[in-house]
Length: 267
Length: 312
Image (cartoon, rainbow over all chains, first blue to last red; front, top):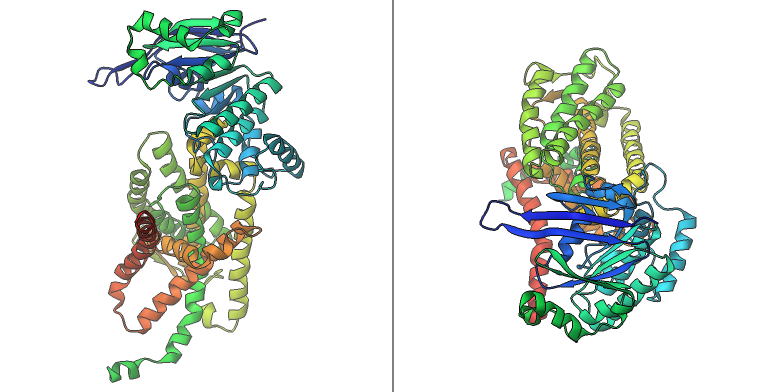
């Protein structure tokens, strides 16, 4: 069986040739098997979110290749790659259209990567299935299908964005610190929903997080980044046994201690 | 003072009203276009000042050339779409900021419009051609039929736009305007959708120009000057007065579009009123600008004021 995602030696430098030059990705290599759920940790500016943005095609990489399920997407524009990807962002406002209703947002997501024509934007049958899907979230949203998404809380919006990402099964789900802006209780709930959706649909997923505990508890694989490279990659049994202290030690080994001062959450 | 009030003739105001309503409905078509860019796409499109005159120029020249006046409106619509296409491509493909792209198109269109007409204005006489709209119809014996036709036309346009923005494609345009990042993540080509929305919007503006040129019996290269302000005024007046009424009800969007027409009618009634109060017509544009500035500022100031009170 081939890899679901192959990242081959990608490089990205922002503002090259200026005083603000920043090497964000410095030769990232990563292969994901179908069904892999990898958590990504690292300090600020380590290249975690940048890696996800490179895969999503927010800008093009300077060097290297990105291959999803055998298809080279390195040169595709952002909206063309979307057919392969489900995305949830750090800012709950980013993943949904605030002035549109819950069902309209979902209908847009259900047509990800399809030609959008002059057929009616949402059908009766769809509406029923969205209602069912929302019921499973257990947030009381199933009776608010026609409410504007802008009226919902951040946690509700993230939950809907997650649901939207899975309506059309993506080859890869990208979670970019999607619980960082939520209060701890809501964050836990959104994480639980993430786990459930990934399991249910057997998705391949990448989750960037600042919370080492979350990184250890979720997924079958963990990757640590530092200065635009992957410096640590564990999976299986080894990852299950991992402790926060192991990660800290690992990081100090490569960076010399600055990690603990970072905005990393140790709790 | 007493002589001033004595000189005001209520009957002359009443006589002006049907014309205000007709003008309001015609300019309401342009206001629909402004609504699409300004509210749905979140794009301040100044192309309209040029594309309105383009629509008028194309319609008048085709009618003078012997084309059926109703058929000429289709070409006015297409000419407007072409103008919107230029702005859209300047913005999305060449990366020029939206307002600037639309100003460039607008300035360029001035020459294009002169070129279409061969001089700064061209007249069409209602006695000579079977026009779809004319000042003469407002007071003529068939005025009921004329107003019925205008309103029916407006309702048809509302229906078409309501339908379009309910389709998959229309929803994609709305998502593009509301949250382009989300739209791209959902596989929506935001550049394409922006160009398309600008084309539809300016198509409506061109259509309005074509009808208005017939209404006033001439196309003029300056007929679109300040059109964007009239369009914004109609949109904003409609939101201030009918915003609460439209929100939350079934087919709210159709009501919102209808309200835009009523906003345009109210605008022209207010204009008729201040003219009737003998305000010199030279000050008309200043008056319009002040009205729009006030209506745009009110929601912002209100928000600022209530925020201060909340934190206090």
